[in-house]
Length: 512
Image (spheres, rainbow, N blue to C red):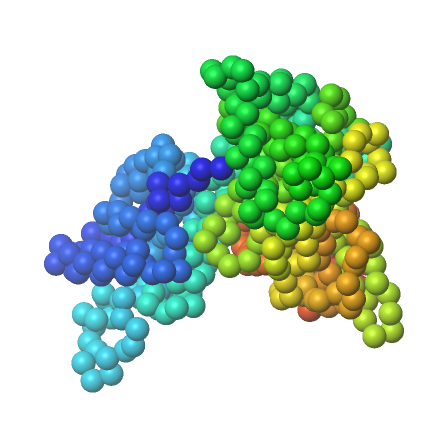
C-alpha cells in the first residue's frame, strides 16, 4: 500500500524568555536553526525536522500548540529550553497539546571553553537548568514524553530522536487507521475480543465488521469479456506471473499441475481482497476460518503478500494485533529486518535449551523470510474449505521482539518479550507453513511465566526491525501500560510490577 513518509514533519521548538535581550535571543535563534538543520540532515531521522520560531511567552506557546494540533502533517514536537524558560508559561499550551513530545536535553556547544568561559557564555547556555525547570512542569502535569540527553551532534542522540519520529509516525497511523474485520472473532476465544469503542477513544483507529461476500463480489468482477470490469483477466494473469517469478512454485501448482486451480483461486482472493481494502481505505484487516462464506479457501498467500506491502493483519478476528502490526510496520519503514503477525505455536524443551516455534496456519509475512519463499498448496484441517496456497520459509537469526496488545478491562496493556531468533536444529520437510524459532529472554521458563502472569495473548507482532525502545515510546504516547520481559526480568519482581500497575493505572485513569 502507498505510504509517503516524506509528507510528515516534526517541529523543533525552542523555549526561552525576553529577559536576556534581543541580541541574546538572536543568538538563541541562530543556534536553534543550526540544530534543526543538523537534525534534518541526519540519516537516522526519517522525517523532516522543521524549525519553529522561538517561544517566549504563554500566548506564543499556546498558539504554537494550537497550530501543531491543527496541522495534519505535524506528527510530533521536539522541545528544547536553550536558556532558562520559566515553565509556568507552558501550562496552557501543554494542557491542550495533542501531539507526541520529545524533550531534547542538549546544548549548542558540546564542550566548556575553559579558557574563555564567562558569564555571557553561562547565560547563553543554560539548558542544564532550563530543561530541568521544564522537566518539572511536564512531570507535575503527568505528561508522558521521551527524554533524550546528550549533544545534538552525537550519533546516539540522533538515533534516539529517529526512534521518536518513527514512533510518532506509528502513532499518527493509529490516529487515522481503519481496520476491517472480515467475519468475526473465532468463537469462544477471549483474548482476541476487546472494547472497540474504548480502543477508538484511546488509539484513534476504527474497527468495523464486513462479510466475506464483500470480497467475493470483487472476485466475481474478474471477467475476461468485460473490458470495463474493475478487475480484469489480465490482472489475474499478471499476478500469477508474479508468483512464478518471486517464489519457488511447487510442481503441483505450476501451469498444468494438478493443484494449479488452487493457486488461481488464491490469486483471485488476493485481487479481490486487495481491491476491497484499497477501495475502503483500510490499512489493516482480520479474517477467521470459521466465517469464510463463499471464499473457496482461507486467504494464505493473499494475506502474506498484503502484509509484505505494509498492511496490518490479525488472525481469527484479532483486530488489536492487526492494528499493532500496521503501526509497527509504519515505524519500521526503511529499517533492516521484517515485521509480521505471529503466534507462539509449539515449544522445544531440552536440557540444552528451550525454544518457541512461532508460526500460524498460513499468515506469516515474507518480510521475515531468510530466502526465496516456496509457494505450496496443502490441506487445512479446519475451516471446511479447499486446500489453500501459502508461502513457506524459515526466518533469519538475530535479535527480535514479540509484542502483544491486550484489553485488561480497565486499560490496555502492551507486553514485549525480547527474543533471539535461532536456526532450527534440523529441516522441517513436513511443516507446510512459514516459521521462526526463537530463544526467549531471559529464558523460556521466566519469559512464559511472566507472559502468562501478564495476560499476554498467543497472537503477537514479531519484529526484527522495531526494538523495545520503540514500544516504550509508543506506550508513553498512547498512555497505556507497558510490561517488558528481557534479560533482567525476575518473576517475583515482575508480579510486583503488575500489582503496582493495578493501583497506578486506577489512580491515573480516575485522576485520584
